[in-house]
Length: 218
Image 1 (cartoon, rainbow, N blue to C red):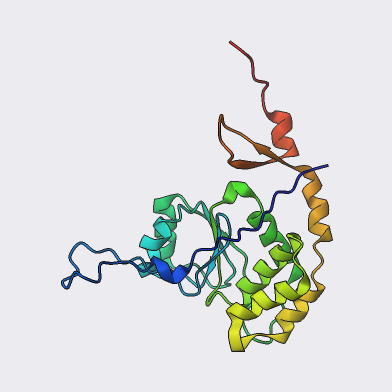
Image 2 (image 1 turned 120 degrees about the horizontal axis):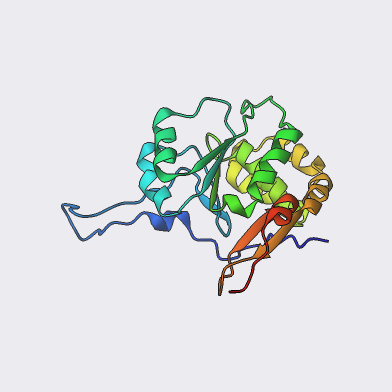
């Protein structure tokens, strides 16, 4: 039996509060205004969501200490974004999902993206699509179901970010998505705390544990 530690974080920072700068400084000299990507928000501790990051958003992303990005767009990742990820040693996981209104959300793609999302070795992680609404909302909604959120709360959170452009097909997908398969996959995963005096979580697969050499006292 494994312990799946996917906790809710009630203290979500207001993304609007990160736009800094000294308003009393008329010339703006020395000010660094950190603007997050569109629709940026904290999903969970070390898990974030947003629309597609622009070059002007890079200084803000630096403050997150990202280890990976989950992109749900089908288009090739922009060159300047790839260069930024390379310079910061951030790993890109791209799961292409058609973002048009009539397109169906593929269950297998969402499941594979969830596997990356819940692997704490990939944290801190940013999830994004183009606007941070529909595709991102579906992935986050399925993550919430894995956290045992009630369906009404899952759908309400989706609607908060999608606004007036909520899609019935997305809501139906969230209603029908079954997380039991993913829970079965997690039987091969072990969560361990590591590091002296540290509460940082590490996710290890069964094979990693078997290959780890024994610790010998000196």
